[in-house]
Image: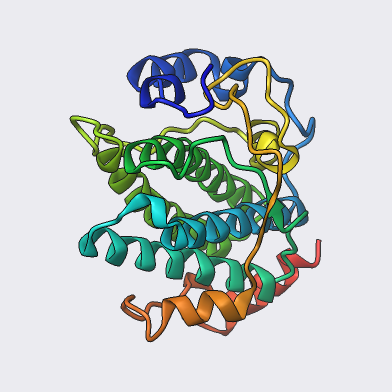
Length: 257
């Protein structure tokens, strides 16, 4: 494979999704599940905080890479995506989440052009949507419907990012699904899929079976992200857990498990 990824190499589109539906996403990757047991609250917030730290780093880098030549409309989208991922991360941190690491490896050529960026990001956002759908299920099993609702809130926004990035990648139908794809049973099942982003090692198979940059990219820090976001573009919304004292008590009890 060449150092610069092509959209065809990175994203298999409907063929990948069809295989995922039949085999399960971890089956497509030929990897065993990361956790044999069901998720607990700590597993969920740890994996989610790691994913959101990566996502925030990813969008920050996309906005600061001169090679992309983003249009003003694309920059506006990217800034809103950065702001939402940063908000997700702050919520997780405030509720016991801590990222496993703050340095990440990107596939070579990810930021060389907009189509490749869209293709690579589409893979990541597909994983994030699936993980948050799994988190919704897991929180419901844990008896924490308010947290399940928050996970659903986040999944909706990650789905918005997925649609935009599929369009950026040149997909004919960016909004190609009627339901978010339930590719994971547990949030922990996403870990082996995204591990190459953490260690930079090329997996044996799957859409991330590509060469990675040799140096990790550092999370830029809260202050740098806030400076880039500026006044912010998002409409103010509240997590479902802010709906009342009962929800807050339930959240506190669940996160202590």
